[in-house]
Image 1 (cartoon, rainbow, N blue to C red):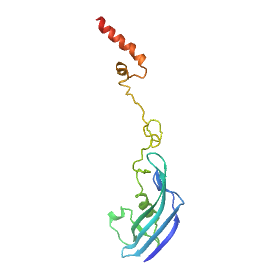
Image 2 (cartoon, rainbow, N blue to C red; image 1 turned 180 degrees about the horizontal axis):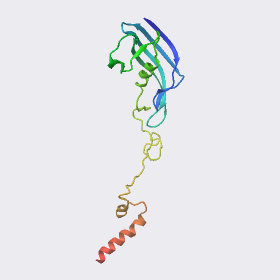
Image 3 (tube, rainbow, N blue to C red; image 1 turned 90 degrees about the vertical axis):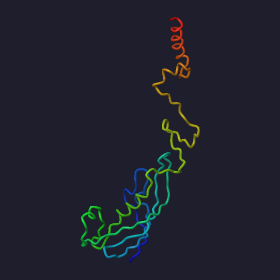
Image 4 (cartoon, rainbow, N blue to C red; image 1 turned 45 degrees about the vertical axis):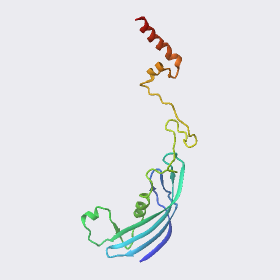
Length: 177
């Protein structure tokens, strides 16, 4: 068994669209390599700094994350079942193992799908984009265009003077008949 404690730069594409580990930022590896009958068992933790933006208000996010890692790398001369080969098994080649895919899988799968700065983040207004946290009573009056012509009958049209003559004409026609 061997233990490794290293600081390595993060590779490219170590995240998703809104959040991830920046390329070149420091990753702290605390790993243990154990020889087992089937191959080499790698286990330990990876500490990274995660950066991104809130999916609701687009404010920047930054926090540390510690991720557990465990993967078995099979010796290349080991005969494997067909179904195991389809699962993209990790293989020991020339007494080395490629940790990048293992670390990427471990870190990226722990990232939130929809990152938020706070659970109660209100986000941005869908109409105008104003930050709702700064304007708590912000709202827009939305008129359904299908009911716009009927709004004049109740006096709630955007221009009540324009709607009233039509209403008078309809009432006058009823009185005359």
